[in-house]
Length: 270
Image 1: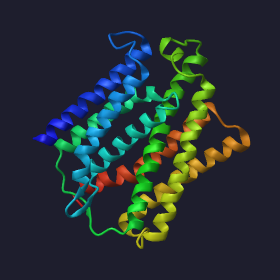
Image 2 (image 1 turned 180 degrees about the vertical axis):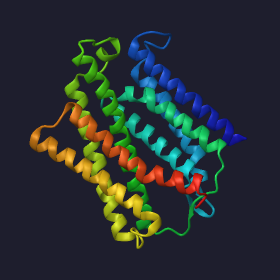
Image 3 (image 1 turned 45 degrees about the vertical axis):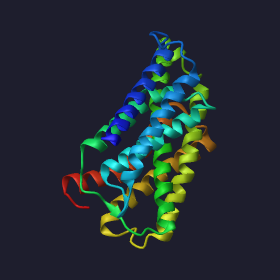
């Protein structure tokens, strides 16, 4: 019951932070003139409460529980936390309008769907490092995907000469693109380290139950590598950069959540 109350408070704070950010962006509503730091503080409180509810479930007595809903909630938690930390120095807080409600939804699903847990027992520090790198890479590249969607909307509005109030409230297009590639660069490094540690420390990385995840992750890595190379050599930007970012993240999403969804929820294999 205590955990349920904390979770409910986290959900309310996530939604409140999203509403505050949205009203600040459009300049309408009772929280339209809240200070930027106040909005971020509400988000950080939600993240802290989310972590307090999720971590005991993840780190159970039997080992690390990375079932579908726990893993989804963990990635949503890290994505929200990384976004808020980045927003302390970069103008990316408006991504929270969409991302913070997603974190709230992930917490609701974790509490309401009790699937059979996937528990890894007696993990070595090498495997734990691989898991941490994988989750961080996914979270940062997820942020990049949301940034790409926002950039696509901004690009569309500007090309159609309809820069409404929402678009005028965003940073300039060049700044948005620079932030996108900073996220992709950081995520790509973490994804590379994740794949390297997987090859180094996982004995069965190409086993039948992991082959699809490995192949799809390698395809995603290739897409992001091609995007960064195209940016450096040919100055890729705009729609091409957005398209490649979303394709790369799509493969990454299929690699992790696609396989877990099929194996755990549809086939009942853990």
